Length: 196
Ligand SMILES: CC(C)(COP(=O)(O)OP(=O)(O)OC[C@H]1O[C@@H](n2cnc3c(N)ncnc32)[C@H](O)[C@@H]1OP(=O)(O)O)[C@@H](O)C(=O)NCCC(=O)NCCS
Image 1: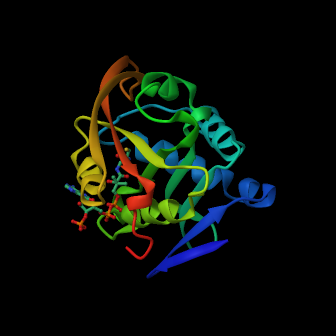
Image 2: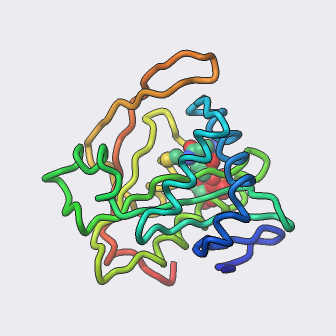
């Protein structure tokens, strides 16, 4: 379903099994490319990236948005799921937020050549619009401490640092496993202006 357009880029929501199947390969390719660059330098094999996509798109109440160009290119994505379905993060934040009423912005990425055109911001804003406010009161995300473009974007959109850190291990493009430090940011959903 088309959500909005930004010049030649279309923001779409993936919901039906047909849509999930149609965009699987393009999403997987964009995911590998984006996370292999700054600031994560992560190595995902195609099967791993596909596994992430399958898991997220089959999570109940997920919101998966893609930024597409033409008939088959994915140039960006933004995925959100109820926090309770991300057990490692839910465990980390237990007692700090109402877990069953928190929505987690799990993935965001835009291909380097399409950055700076407000695609990232739109992928966040449109997910915020789509979250069920009858169920969810808080929206959260995790960002690497050296990811200034992303944390600045979220700050500009009203998200605040929760002062909670988590070290995440990942396989890097140099073939080594190393950890990077990530912090959590949050917003109360009722304060999000749907007209923004
Ligand atoms: C973070 C990311 C999604 C931003 O996408 P984008 O399409 O370039 O973002 P936008 O054009 O919508 O920019 C939104 C805001 O981000 C901030 N921003 C973007 N690039 C920035 C940079 N290089 N330095 C500082 N702030 C930056 C600005 O606040 C900008 O708002 P402005 O245009 O009003 O100044 C993109 O850089 C990306 O994919 N990075 C790699 C993957 C990643 O870090 N994902 C996020 C994980 S939490």
